View 1 (cartoon, rainbow, N blue to C red):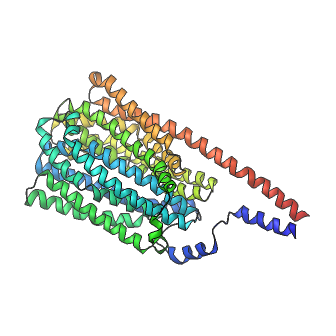
View 2 (cartoon, rainbow, N blue to C red):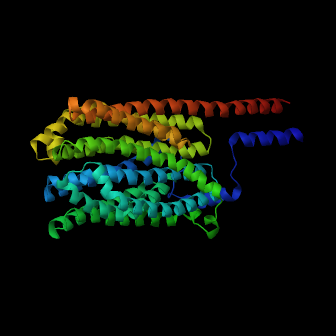
View 3 (cartoon, one colour):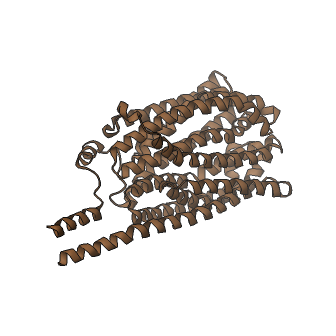
Amino acid sequence: MRTTTETTELITDLHGKDMNIMEKTELKMNKKSLVSDFTKGSPTRLILGFFWPLLLTSMLQQLYNFVDTLIVGKGLGDNALAAVGNMGSLFFLIIGFSLGLSNGFGIMIAQSFGAKKMDLLRRNIAATIQLALALTVFLTLLSLLLLPSALRLLRTDEVIMDDSLRYGRVIFAGLFSAITYNISSGMLRSLGDSKTPLKAILVSSVLNLGLDSFFIFILHTGVEGAALATVISQVVSSLICIRQLAKIEFIHLKKTDFHNERSLYLGLLKNGLPMAFMNSITAIGCMVVQFFVNGYGVVYTSAYSVCSKYNNLFMNPAFTVGNAMSAYTSQNFGAKDYPRIKEGLRVCLRVALISFVLLGSLMIFFSHQLATFLLDGEEAIALVENYLPITGLALIFVDFLFVFRSAVQGMGFPVMPMFSGILEMVMRILTIALFMKTIGFQATAMAEVAAWSAALLMNTVTYFRIIRRYTNAHERPKLIRRRRVASLVTK
């Protein structure tokens, strides 16, 4: 009797069946096609199935940004374009912080979903909502209060100062819309749903471009119209995501889910704050670059704005596969299936490599066409032509960086990626400070290359150390238990 019981317990432990029958039934009845379980099935099929809607979502966002830039530039002129572009680093500082928090919270949600701990999943979602409300109020007040001082610190040219202020005030007053979308779409991605964010962005992008044209060309509202169109479209995209979340029955929240112990909030913040600070640190590095660029006049500001947009566009597929890697890794780390994480990494690296070959080539061989598409001034076009081939050659560094960094974060280790963000900032500042006076605008491209390569090295080493440690720790007890089961069965 003792032998049979012990053998049964060991075999059960080997399969890791720690989810009770009620939770199994609940998940089976409610998940349908609304969520994706990344702990079972082909990693390639699951990752690519999640990746393509996510990529289309990101590409639509980038396409909107480009068409929005085109409308602002052609409708309001290069100075208005420079004013909107000048707000990019400040906007990323605030939005990047909130996005980092929501991504960190999403990892905790995905890990509890992967572990099939539904009660913990609901409490994590409830705590995320509470923290997001507090975050929205704090960041809105802070950004509106500090906007004028921040623009002066960036040495914003007086020619574009007024437009920058007017655009920024509308964007930051509507910060709730961006944070709500980030949180709600992040929850959906954590549960394996990348299709709903795609629908949300598709609807909001069409709405945004229509409102842009209406406000700028018909109502002649200036840069405030472009900002207002962005806020309205983000409200719509948020509502679409929230509506989909409400359909997922096993995450329906009760009042008791909001009565959480302090340790749960601290756990979310412990994972979210390093990712938030990483984004903010990266934004500060970009702001320092913007500071140096603005000191050379509006032409440099316009050129750098366009270069930043192309960088974001062409690194977007790898950034997206990084998001897929994060969701996939989080669920499988929660399920303690570490070999499966390594399989997913190989899939994501192959996608990132293909992205580099295709899009890096465009930046190298079609830099003139890309520059003239968004700019009219010959001097600014020449600056962009010199910048894009450099970052195009180095695109492989940032593409692989997204994959390795997301894997580290997905396993619940956000601190080292945060330090890599600090390293990125230091490399950008050093490169700009040392070379801007001697090689001019090309120093901004070299700053990106230095930042990407240094951060990639740090995150790659960190990933292999973590995965080796957990794989070894997990495999050793399993091997011992298997031997014990074999000996018991033989007896």
